[in-house]
Length: 342
Image 1: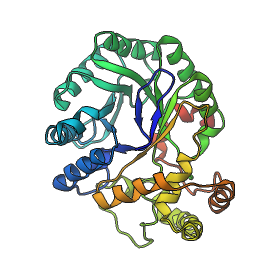
Image 2 (image 1 turned 180 degrees about the vertical axis):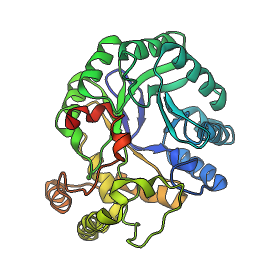
Image 3 (image 1 turned 30 degrees about the vertical axis):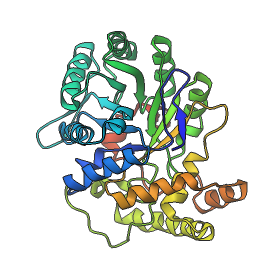
Image 4 (image 1 turned 60 degrees about the horizontal axis):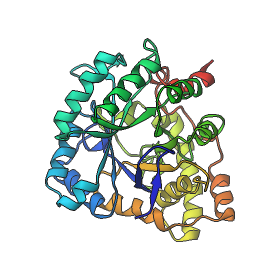
């Protein structure tokens, strides 16, 4: 397994991470047995970075990871690194209730996550969305206290904008920023990505397949379950889906020419954004099944040269996606998008 170092102060992790959210929530029906098998397969393949959130399935995802690690061979269990997001408030029906980054809340969330995960520490801990009512210095400072206590190893950020990143980094060492980055979402290239490279902060890129939209497996006539997040996503709406899938077909032509899949092409493009002097970009793949995981792992063997990259970006030009990445009310909670929304 290839590795990357997240930031100048962060851990060494596998070049691909596994995003575990879909195993518990957001994408319709889940399969616990297959989820555990996929987690074991990921560990066996050398994936060390497991990304979760304490609000994924109301704690279900952390308990699932706990079970997978407990039932994995000891050598694989000991190499696993947990990346946990906290702070999101939900009601019993899963509806969004804001975010809480107060110091007392941080300590509370952390205690519950440690219990559910069955561990004495979390490797990277981050607030899922910046709390506008609490200075980031207070939230990050509280995590820094947990680092001193040995309960957390590294501090991360999620969907933070430039000003927040600077203030957080001035408070404590920041290992990485978790943020959406894909062929359809390249907004971070303007200011956030250069800032992170300058500050020695790594990037864990989620949504690299745009929630399956650019995986090459999505069909125009697919019917989504009511509890599938994508049924409310602008990019999957009827008025946008055809245009977005036209981009996928253009990308497929490039992939076919390389003898690889569309998903592998999209993941390899993100991997190719690593530079020798950068603090590391690690794509998080949200595979829920072993076959999808195997396909994603194949991207590690793909090498896109300058001509390939030009062909990929011609097929899917920056800003070509139809529809925002989240519904409007959720976009309003993204600190990373504040500049664009003004």
